[in-house]
Length: 122
Image (cartoon, rainbow, N blue to C red; front, side, top):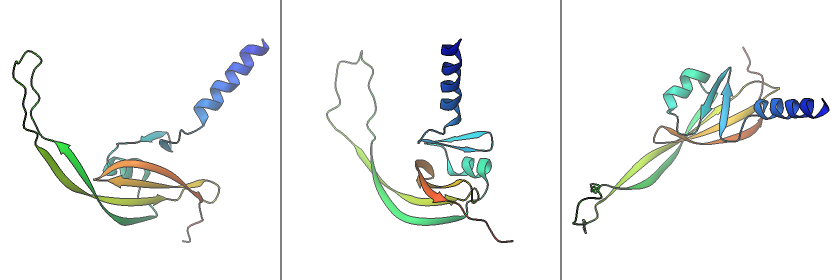
C-alpha cells in the first residue's frame, strides 16, 4: 500500500513539473520548434519583444537518390540563408517565473527562465 502511494506521488510530481524544453500557457503546452504565431495564439502577446540579430544557416540542396540508383551524385550544392533572431519575454505575474523565448526564423529554439514576474500597472 505504501509503495503504491509513493509511486502515485512521484508520477503526480513528474507531470506537474514543466520540462526545461516546454512552457505551459493555461492548459496548453508550448514546445520547441513551434511557430511564433502559434505561441502568440496560445499565450497572448509578450510583455516585450526584441530583435537580437541574424544567424547564418547552411542547408543541403542536392537531390536525394534512391538506394537502387547505381550512380552517386558527386556535386554537392549547399544553400545559405540568414534568419532573423528575436526574443520575447512573457510575464505571468509576480508569483510566477517569467520566460524568455528565443526564435530563429520564426521557430522557437530556446526557452529560458528570467526570474519572477512583476505586476503590470493599469
